[in-house]
Image (cartoon, helix red, strand yellow):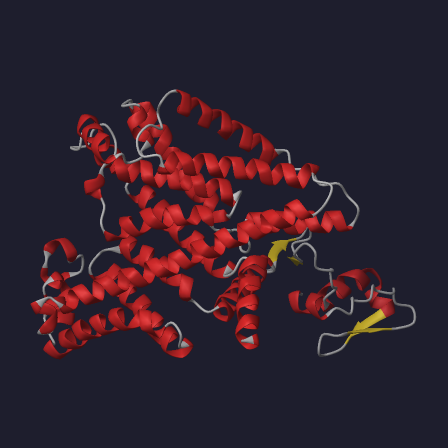
Length: 449
């Protein structure tokens, strides 16, 4: 009993003291915001036919449907073209800002508003990937998805460093953004635009009040207890949302796998053959013909797809098996994106699968990206000096180091009397030679040079 009580108490402490999965939630934020952004940009020339006033699903038809199901969409507030263009541009902007991790809590709410507004305006334009994005856009609101790999994390790091030096840090943009969005929320509420299903309006008001309370406690509280309490509540909400995202991904694969088992084409191993020969799902007919030419290959892919989807939820407690099946599913979605021409569905599913990626792998991936960025920033550029000689510009922040060519240029006026050059190109200084600056003993600077 003591061991059980200790396990329970440690589990409760783990859930309440920290927001779990910071790297996983960051990947989910980046993945879904990038998926939605790429979709909006690709469909930009066709936006008015898909979601705007020129679409076959007219504004009157959408209003009749929404009056019965109570779905939230800001596009029903006006049937004007200008309002549609503004909202579409805001959806693109919030996707970019959420991708970069700027004010992630606020941007996640606006991202959800953009996703729901466009998708609920024309519900017949979506597919499986849109459904996943629809759900995950709501779940992201409850997560702390900007702990790492975000501009918020960078700003928090700089603020801590400034406070450590005794500097006063004030955030004027946050309260201004909160006040402006609050006025907009009050205006649309009083205008009756949020009537219908109360889920989204209540969520908007709760998040707005919570952000104001968080700022007020951090600004005016004299003791640390209120902030600790808010941190505990925030951690519980974040961890609960992360658990829901994981359960949603498992539910998607489990239901897809078990429904496939009931189909006769999946039972006889020929189900994969048919979508490869549909014109709508064949952007590369030659590639589809090549893959479907072998009956054994079609059989293996058909049974393998069912086996992986059904078995994945049961392998979460075995890390090695889970990682193998996770890799297989990511490869499968990448193949679907190329072979069947469903890139956004595949990107949405890969982003959902990212919640199960190991933290060690994500940290290693982040380290690779950081080193690649540093190398790209540290690439020296060669320019031509006044006398036509090649001069290498050392990147900013790296101490400049004199090369043998620079040394020759420095002593050139007295080279005939004070120095001589050996056959290997090294400069041999005599007592009369001008003293050259000594290169800094810095391995990193020498590497850059």
